[in-house]
Image (cartoon, rainbow, N blue to C red):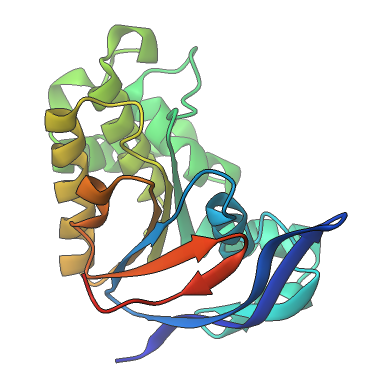
Length: 223
């Protein structure tokens, strides 16, 4: 199977703190990888490095064959928008836009026109079971519905890599299981998912895991 992510001696240091310390791992296309560990272990920093949101202070990370540190900030932003979908714990939806308009945002940033994006945005909402909520604003949606909108938004530019930072942390267990099932289905479609979590319940949905402690990354047996 081809490689989606390759980290080689990947490091990120803030002052004297080694948030990520010489990490070496690969993630194959179609993997669902859980990054586990206690708060402060470096999980979110690792996700930011993979997504090009944070530059490494040592080593390198390749995503789909592209070494992110060779790109300038503008190139990294374009690469991320076109190849990586981001899902956050607190959804980060724009409150003045309705659901389908929020889904359209990545394509708008890539030069699309809103009037041309309604059909594709609504189709993505249908995929996550929210076609009947397309015209509702975030304040009119439950937490689980907002996270589904965020997942649809992450798929807008058809990325092959999905990065999810504690996507069920603000949800009840039943709704969280629904979201994790959606992430599983993305892998079944051939996408790669890397999810940060501190919850064993969430990690159990993954096909394999990476564990972090004090910036170090270890890879136990498959989940």
